[in-house]
Structures are given as C-alpha cells and as structure tokens.
Image (cartoon, rainbow, N blue to C red; front, side):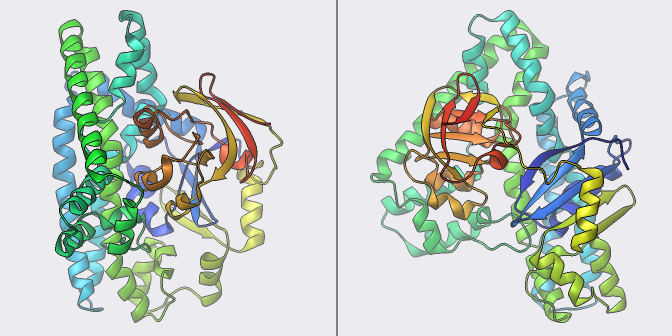
Length: 470
C-alpha cells in the first residue's frame, strides 16, 4: 500500500505512445525531478493523468522559480522554443518521409531519434502549468498591491495579442469565402491547419468539407473577419500601454507580466505543434501495423519499449493483451526506469484500489467550486463535451462542461450559456475565449465532468465561482 496521495491533473484524448514519448517519460528523466511515478487511466476515448500531489506541486514551484533567476528572459525562452521545435520538426519529417516509402530497416533508428527529440519539448509543456499553479497568483497579488486598476490590467494580460493557429485558420477560411472560394486555397489551408482536428498518432486531418463547416455559422464573413482583427489590434494596443507602465514602475514585475502574457499564446501554440508532430508521425505507425498485421490504430497503444522490441525481434504483443487496450479501460504506470501497462480488468481494478482508493467512488455533491474566469450568471442544461466532435451537440444556452476547452471547440462554443472546466488557469483556452466572447466561465473545478451529467439543470454563478444543481 502507498501513502502517496494522487490527484487528477488533466484529461486528454491521446494514446500511450503520445504521452510516453512527448510528456511523461521525458519529465521523469529530468535531473533533478521530484516526480517518481505517474498514472494514466485510459477510459472512454480519453486519458486521465494522475500525479502524486506533493511531487507535482514541487515540480510546479521548480519551473516557476526560473522566472526568479537574474538571467531569466522570456524573449530568450521564446527563441529557444523555436530552435528546439526546428529539431523536432526535422525528426518528424524524416520519419514520415521514410515511412511513406513502406517498411524498412531504416525506420527503427529514425523512430528512436523521433522519440528522443521530444525531450527538448519538456520545458514548454510544463512551464505553463507553473503559471496556473504558482505564477498567476503571484502576478495578481503584486498588481493588487500596487495598482488601483489591477483587475483591468490582469484581465487584459490574459487576452491574446498574437493569433493562435485556430484563429489563423478561421480568418483564412473567412478570407477564402469572401474572395470566392478558390479550391486551391482551401487545400492549402487544409494542409497547413488540418492537424488541429487531432491529438494523437491515431487521429486524422480535417477534410476540406469539414473546414468549410467551421465557418458555416458566420452570417457575414466580412463583419466577422473585421471584428476578429479589430479586437486583436485593440488588445495589442492595450498590452503595449500596460507594458510601458510596468517597465517604468518595476522591471521584475514587467518581466513576470510579459512571461505570463506570452504564454497566453504559447500555451496553445505548443499544443498545436505537438498535434502536428504526432499526426505527421502517423505514417510510421500505420506502416508498423501493416508490417506486423495489426489492427489499424493499435500501434498508438503500445509503449516505446514494445515497439522497439517488435522491430528487433519480429514479435508483437499477444492478441488478447492488445484487445484489452483497444476495447477496454487500461492503465499506463510510468516510473523513472520503466513503463507498465495494466489492462487485465482484475489487475487494473486492484491497482487503482491500492493507489487511488476513491477512484470508483460516486460523488454525491450537488455543488462544485472553481475560479471565475469571466463574471456572470447563467442557468441551463448541462452538456458534457469530451471530444471536439461533440461540440456540435451543444445547443443554444446550454452549459458547456468539459475537462478543458480547446481551439477546435470554437465552431460551437458561442452557443454556450456558460463554460465550466475541470482544469485551467488565467492562460487556459476556456479563460481566454470566455473573456473574448463575454461568456460566464468557471475554471479549475477539478471534478465538474464527474459530478454533472448531460441534461442536469444547473445554475452557474461565475462571480462566486460556483455551479450547483437546481
């Protein structure tokens, strides 16, 4: 039995391979790292990430402490991000190109390079979480101490002044429609932004028809495009004014504010590139499946060790074991030197009972609490959104409840009477979009998706950060 307390930090629609090579294993390899173990529970087409609470908070404070160093510069950090991404991008393209030619002995070394280069991405994956858990509270406290208009400053810093990829896509589609709908331009947009539809090596690009559907609800493309660009320009001007004030008053506070504001953009950008990297590595996984005569999509559920073993020996997992991973709930247990997959139902349930004792308990709460991202009140029926494809089920005035919203939700999010999320902080997507669209929003509830169900009638008080059944 363990005395460690695990908490659920985030939920994502991804796979064993995706999270092992690009997120968890690199974090466990960091030196030093407080992380000793991480548990991923795969169920219902999504993954729940459980961390030891004390270890996770120590990790967040360690990343946040970078900002306290005298040599910290968000500009250098941004430059390093671009340089590191260039290395990852090259490895992805080399693996994709080789895999598209069919299976060959050259693929294994390229795959191993592909899995190693993601170590470079660890700082950009983890740093924005330190903003959520540490730095945004520090910024708010400092602003509140020195500025009468601190709330306006804080709220403005949390708006994007750079265009994220989803906004670039929507604006590109609106321009495409305004200029007559040239098919070649639509194909270019599909190639450039189609990866935003997925999250893993098993997902696919948006089709051209699906891209057209993203702007179907814009009655006047010209007005919509103008509104988007004018809003971003107004935000940019406000941000420049705030930075001018902070630079003059306190250089340290200025750099902290710039860091947090930069990650309003980078938090989403890093995930959009992550999606591109994994989805463009998909040809390797499909070639692996064809060569070893496995069901399509199954390679994404293997560990790195299992894929390398198969390539070296010609032997893959037994069919029954693979069946459990494809069809049932299973666990991936990450430790510093080993990754274990537990799919057999009895072993899985016993593991969860020992390490996360309350995992299967039903919560009888009628009210949940979080943090206000945008004030307001709303009543409506709950609509649980687990995947981007579900956003089209949202009806006008319904309360959107999700682990976290993502840019691809924008096609329907305007219909929401309010937004409620399990996760998130000031730079998360739900917080940003709620301020842009002025929709009441409560973030960081931790368990709203478990407490509420489709059709529940709830009242959202985004002033107090509460959601209760009525």
